[in-house]
Amino acid sequence: YGIAGFLADQEAKGMLPPSLWVAVEHFKSWYANRTDGTFPYERFLLEELVPRLEAEHPGFGGSPSTRSVAGLSMGGFGALNLAARSGAFSTCLALSPALIEPPFQQVGWFLRHSLKRTFPLDPARFVPWNPWKHLGGACDLVVTCGTEDKYGLAETCRTFARICQERGRPLYLQLSPGGHDWAYWTPAFKRWTPWLLGLAEAPGTGPVDATGISPMIGP
Image (cartoon, rainbow, N blue to C red; front, side, top):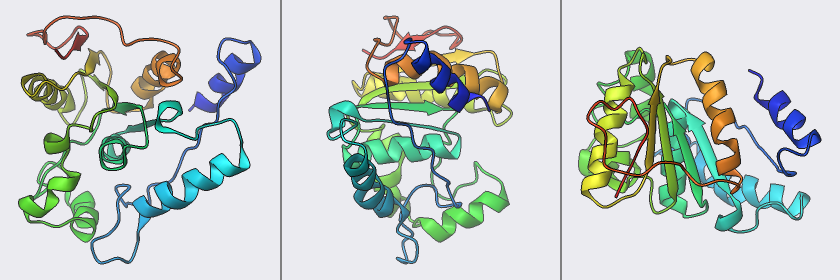
């Protein structure tokens, strides 16, 4: 989708510093450990993959201040959870995140099956994975979404931003034209790459905009 080539080109031109990027498959895991213990994917990512990569590539990562996490749709949900549950990342970019809660009626039946296999259906037991409760933890947070998202996630993200603001959780929300597809995600990721690398601050200040179209930031 052009992201790997973009990163290589920007690094070769000196526009971005050398960096290590890893894209992982989701395996319909929602980037979490299954409650029955049969597929501990979150543990693998945090306790095996990250330490292995940092051992093999000295100079990259090593502490939360030098790590970022990003994801789109299901991966946006995963990025928020990994950031909140582990404290292993200083910045999180969630693109069109699936902000779900039990009984998971927000998604189609084909995804609901994987959710029910991974998470408890009891809302009280789901709290540790609930983005509406942990709000992505304490990391610097950017949430983006296309205003023509076919799942209506722009309005969901707008509501999420208002809840964050009410609870004193700073974030930057960008709602801009686009759908739930790579035509939106690729340029959105490119825009925020310097921020993920610690080269730029999230722009803009002020209260949550009533329209939700222009950028906004929490308190």
